[in-house]
Image (cartoon, rainbow, N blue to C red; front, side, top):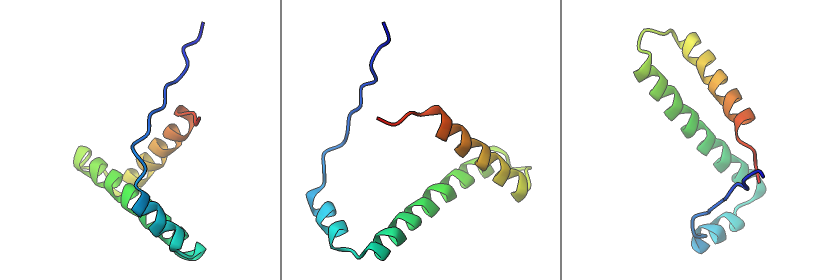
Length: 77
């Protein structure tokens, strides 16, 4: 019998939810894109530290590879 995945979540930050609800749709999208840019930048920095001899192009290719793998590896609830 297959074991069911167990999902746990951090407590909801009510003040943060109210702040997001007060934003315009365009601003919400901008906040999301800013968060994505930060996450990708952190990943790129980690790869740069791990593979210091790779060119920017090679780092970007590894980044795309990692993001593609993550998309296919983790199922959503």
